[in-house]
Amino acid sequence: MTVGDVSNVGTVQPGHIPDWIKVRVHRGENYERVSGVVREKRLNTVCEEAGCPNIFDCWNRRSATFMILGSVCTRACRFCMVTSGRPTEYDLGEPARVADSVRQLGLRHAVITSVDRDDLRDGGSQIFAQTIRAIRRASPQTTIEVLTPDFGGNLDAVATVVAAGPDIYNHNTETVPRLYPSIRPRAVYRSSLNLLARVKELAPEMVTKSGLMVGLGETDLELDQVFSDMRDHQIEVLTVGQYLRPSPKHAEVVRYYHPDEFASIKRRALALGFAHVESGPLVRSSYHADEQVPRRLRTPTPTST
Image (cartoon, rainbow, N blue to C red; front, side):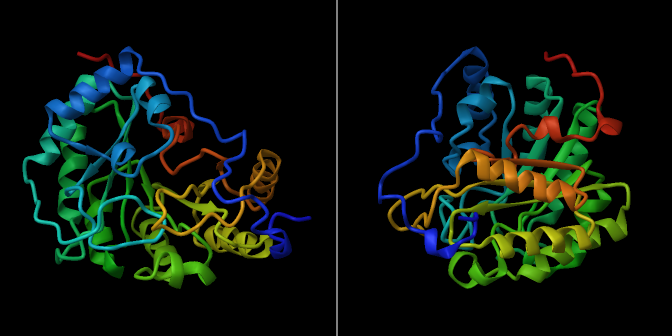
């Protein structure tokens, strides 16, 4: 059967996770160092807040995705483990602490993301911009990737982030349009695509990136249409990973994709013209993000201090 054959969904028994989805838990020296810097600087990481299964791998590689603008999200998407509610935090000192952490860890590539802040007029875009500029000053050799929310469709907020000059602008579509009402109810599929198209209009040289989860009930045809839509909007880098249910209150996993199916997805996406595709069971938007930086942007790894 094909990847998207809906007659094949739901065949995995509840609570059963396939053997190919396994995470090696290893708290090595680098893991402890990243953890220590994050604690010292009073920072949040999506690695922790979203319960990412790759935290041990990434932190041992001295790679982390910093989550700015607090740890409380104004939305409650049914796939996400981040706490939802009314945020109270707006820390003007956060950009400098993130930048100092990037410098201390000697990061070659830094990823900056955030919770949704629909309570703020600019969605937090100014803090994104300040963080980018602070990293540029503290660690000029580091390439910078932002993974932003949709800013409620506010393209002026997008322009604010673009003007700060990140190397890669990432915004996830997350799933196929049909599933938005049940999985991502406060987002608009076309708005997410238009956001990334606007990035390209403002900065044609900036790399655009997006990602989505599989296993929520989508079909082959729907996935291929999303990939086609992305290319129509000049998105260059794609990530595709297996949805894993964070808790019983979140959306159920409809099916688990086999690694061979992820390989098929990668081939189909590359055939559409993506510059880079990461596709696998444990792939997440920022997983091995440093390896997805286009060659023209790469510089020698800065020395940690």
